[in-house]
Image (cartoon, rainbow, N blue to C red; front, side):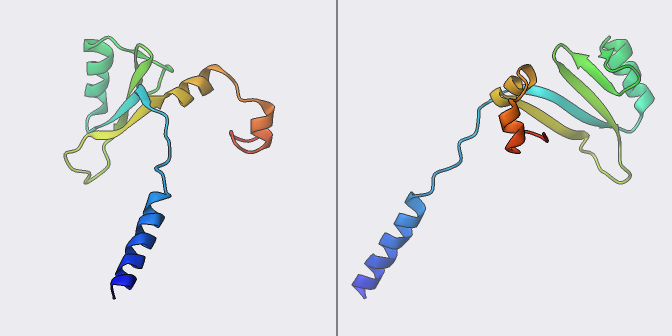
Length: 115
């Protein structure tokens, strides 16, 4: 019985030990935050008028705060009290991809968008 228990423990440890967590690039900042609004006109007056944020592109609900932005979305019916639609973080890979176009080799390999 001891032998079986020891064997089980060794097998369990060997399976768990060999798996490493996937490496992910560190988060370097916030790209944008999106809020739900039950009153889009009042929200536009607040962000564009009171705070003086620029709308980019014109006619959208995206307000620029330096290199970051605040987006407004209509509040879905019956959504509740949580008004944060989503928050998008940046990491070094997103920054590099925005500054340097991908190589044709990566596109051809299907690793970066479509060729």
